[in-house]
Length: 426
Image (cartoon, rainbow, N blue to C red; front, side, top):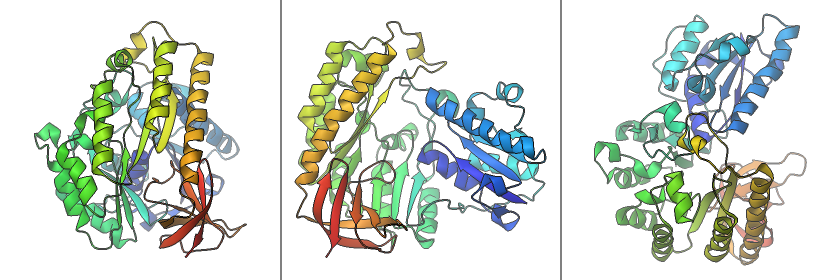
C-alpha cells in the first residue's frame, strides 16, 4: 500500500505527524503525491477559522480523487477531529476514519489498527522535512486561557514532558543529522511551572547545550509574563542558544490586553524588552500582534502602531482577530468591521516593512554565520538563515552559488530588501 500525507498548521502539528508516521515505512510505501497513493492522511489544523477552512477544503479536494477511485481512502488526524469529534463524519462522508486523540502516539495506534498493522514502540519520529533542523515539543496544552484562543479547549491543561524524554529525543534528532533544534509548546516559558519547577527551562537549556553536534537551540512561543532573570541570563550566556526571542505581545493597550486575558501590561512588556536588550547583545526579538480584537478602538490601534515604530522589533507578524467557538472573546460585543481589520493589518505590515528595510541595509558589509536550508534547482541559488531567523517564518539569506544544505558558512552581506539579505561566501 502507498500512503501520502498532507501536513497543515504549525510546527507542533508537524511533530505530531512525524510521531504518527514513525515505523510505517516498514510496512507501507510513503509517497509525496496523493494522486499516486492508495490512502492519504490529512493532519489538520483548527486554531482559527481560516485554518479550519483550509483543512476542510483540502479534504474536499482529495475527495475528487475518491470519486474517480472509490477504493482510495482519506483519513484525518489533528486539531479538526480533536475539536469537533462528533460533528465531522456526517458532513464529510468521503473520510474513512477520523482520529481524534490529542496524543500523537495514541493516534499512531489508531492508524495502525485501521491499517491492520502490528503496534510499534518506536520513539523515533519519521522526519518529513529537512534533516538539519527540527522542532522539539516541551509540553502539550495551555494554562494561559487567553480569551481569544481555542487551544485549551482542544488540547487541555498544560502538561510538561519529562526532561529525560526531551533530551533523549534531541540526541536522536542530532544523530539523524539535526544541527538546529527549535523548542515549541503553547508557552515554552511555562515549562515545568505546573509542577512547581520554575527553573526547569533553564536546566533544560543547559543540558541541551551539552549535546555534541547540536549547534543552534531556538526558543519559540514564549510568553512575556513568564520570563525570569535566570532565563534571560541563560539565553545571554549559553553559546548554543541563539540570540533570538520569539515574544508575542499581541497588543500594547492595557484595556485590550486585559480583555485578551494576556496577564501582562504595557509597562511589563516595555520593561521586559528593555531587560532583554540590555542583557543580550545583538538580540533579535520576533513578536506577533493581533488587530481587530472586539472593542479595539482606532486610538488603541494607533497606540500599537506607534509602539511598533518606537520599539523597532527585528521580526514581526500580524494577524486579524478570528472569532472562535467556545472562547470568551466570542461573547464580547463591539466587533471590529472586516474592512477595518484588514486595513489595520496592512498598516502594521507596511510599517514593519519600512523598519525592516532600514535594519537590513545596516547589515550590508557585515560577515554573518548562515545555515543553508535549500538550493533552488533552477537558479542554483542557496537559501539560508542567520541565527536571527527561525525556519519557515522569518527572513532568508540568498547566496548566488550552490552550497550544501545543512552546512554553516560565513557570508558577507552585499545587498538587502525588506525581508531578504543577499550575501557572498567568504
